[in-house]
Amino acid sequence: MNKMTKLTPIAATLALALVTSTAQADDKLTVGGFIDMSYVSTDYDGASSESVSGVDQVEFNIGYDFGNKLTATVDVEYKNSTDGANVEQAYLSYAVSDNLSIKAGRFLSYSGWETEEPTGLFQYSGTGYAKYFYGYYQQGVSALYSGEKFAVAVSVVNDLAGPQSTDTEHPGIETMVAFMPTENFTVKGFYSVDGDTTMLNTWAAYSVDSLTLAAEYNSSEDTAGAGSEADGYLLMANYGFESGLALTVRYHAFEVEDSVGTLLEDASAITISPSYAINDNLLIVTEYRMNSDEIFGDSDMIAVEALVTF
Image (cartoon, rainbow, N blue to C red; front, side, top):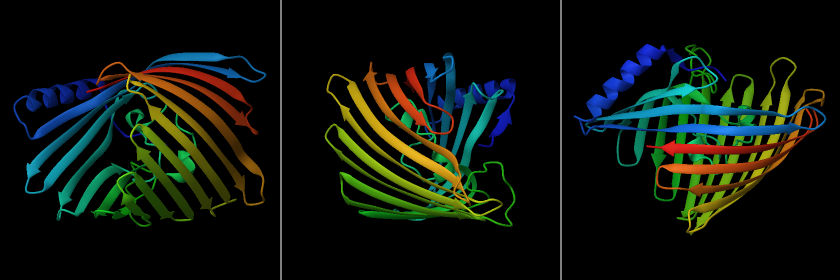
């Protein structure tokens, strides 16, 4: 994926200090975020194992309500894989009515069951197939209409997965239709087009009491150059106990092939992830993941994550 707009460490520190001091004096400003750190050990079949640890990501979410139905959102993040801090999202949102809102700037795609941020995941790892089927951070304009039992959205962006793209000659279009027939059941479908690339993402989720069940199916096609086709799906169950303990079990699989049917990727995994909420701000997530990969080889992964939200 493309990097976000980069801030120098000094500029980032000054910006966050200014935000913090302003937040104390202005109740129209909200500041939140998270700190994500982990230890991961991976054992590769037929090869040596490796382990890594450290701070994965730190993010500050800054919101300002101007009144008159206009708000601004800016997310600043630090990732251990990049140098310095980055502006992840920056957009204005205007509430045309109680049901219709429009936003413009750089924002995250609506698509995909699994979120980009660790705070929205039920386990430590993502499937790894989002780059084939989900939109990413985008620059453009998006409209969302939400009713009691349905919602629709249309986004017109420079690039479905290009947060720094400024070329508007050939925009990408992402559409969403969602149905919520009951308060426990949600179904969403996304169809996105960007030049020679088309993506279909559909998912359904059922939540009742402490149980959440989800299923997702994806397909995409890129006819540019040699061309490629991809399909993937996941099944997930999560149950939360009163003690603060929760357990997630997930199975996912996907494959990618070129125009003549040669497999470029063919992978699946079973993930078992117990977690424990120590308090409202600190969540400990553990994970055991068994990867089966026909192209790059099998592996087993163990992860321990500490996720602090504020």
